Amino acid sequence: MSFAGISFAALDFYEDLEADNSKAFWAAHRQIYDEQVKAPLQELAAELATEFGAAKFFRPFRDVRFAKDKTPYKTHQGVYFAESRRYLQVSAAGLYASGGYYELASDQVARYRRAVAEDLPGHVLEQSIKLAEKAKLEIRGEQLSRIPSGYPKDHPRQELLRHKSIWATREFGCPDWLQTPRAKTEVVKAWRAMQPLIDWLDKNVGQSDLPVARRGER
Image (cartoon, rainbow, N blue to C red; front, side):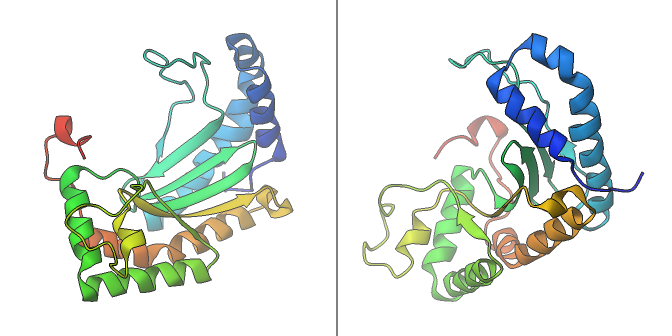
């Protein structure tokens, strides 16, 4: 089936799940999740795949083995497109889309900061961010509280140097068009506006060369 939109029933499901995050609620409302959340997102992901690559659906179950919060279910459905570094999410708050580098290993952080500090690539990054903001995107990412050591405290791009990860986002909320095929059009428009930032990251940061066990180090 072709993508027809995301029903507000999907948002209502997550609002109710936030109020009653229990196995009993999930069992009683699993059909709503399958039909109103998972099915339309699968249809959307299939149509987006041509331009943005294959999608990975995150499990709806939380890993609570080492968590203080033992509630069993996630209150959103996330879909990640690894090939294009794009992410999509539906929750009680509505539709959310983003794109960028969400977690950087230590070698990636080092390459990112070197590029930001240099005049030419640093200027290109600033321009890509301006384009994103002009398209009503927000730039986010994990940041240090101060400029990292080895860089002058008065560096003109000190705000960007503090980043340990960086991505662009658009929180669409729950407009009426969410329930129509226009939802796909809006996601594609936002994702395309993120392309200059992602191109910069691909060129200047790239994938980590470290073994998986060491990638959490900073």
